[in-house]
Length: 275
Image (cartoon, rainbow, N blue to C red; front, side, top):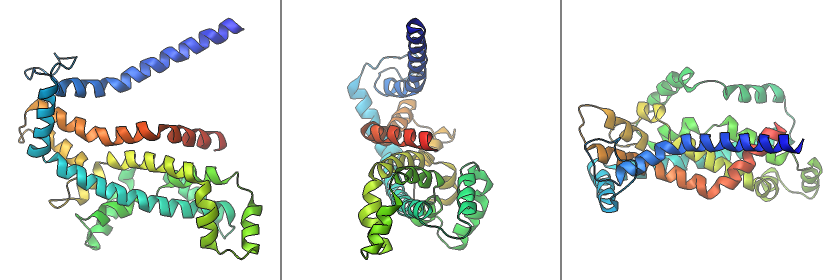
């Protein structure tokens, strides 16, 4: 029995290691391609050999492709969207967990079903709505449609299910209003859920391409759209500069995840166990 468990652990460790290598390989290719001297063939250099050349290419990407502006714009609308998601999702999780109202189960079911719908099904109505409101090529036009997240509501609800309803009732008896209960009791208990939501939504929104590409023009330059435009054959740039731009675009979400990965794992684990 013990030998079988050891073999099972070894197999799982091997599979996890292989999967980690598969995930890390593209990142390593970008890194080694940026910090190397050979620009004739991007597949020849597997190990970086020139730190100065990599820094030069990153600087050139920030200036030539204007990755710096695209990064600032992406940080701005990502931050706006994440704040909106936190506000809406935390309030929705609070209401669905502790309050009874007509058609509660139906509304929650529709909310969960929305997670299964691909974005392309409803992107045209959103597109027409944003343009009719004259919000195209604005931060509000990008952010508002992405502020409703069923996944965020679901994650936050998992952190509230352990809170006894008697706490809420006691607060009401003591004269606390809905907002006081939400601010002083509910939000502190959802701290880990909030951090999990911030990380997951930041990575999701940072990498969004289809919606930002539809509603942005010359004023706002999302980094995903800027990097995708590098594939245009009419826009020639040194391949090393392109790789440096891709590497720069990948750094912020990677750092966010590495810093807060403990909360992400905890949030996903709680959602999986209780859900």
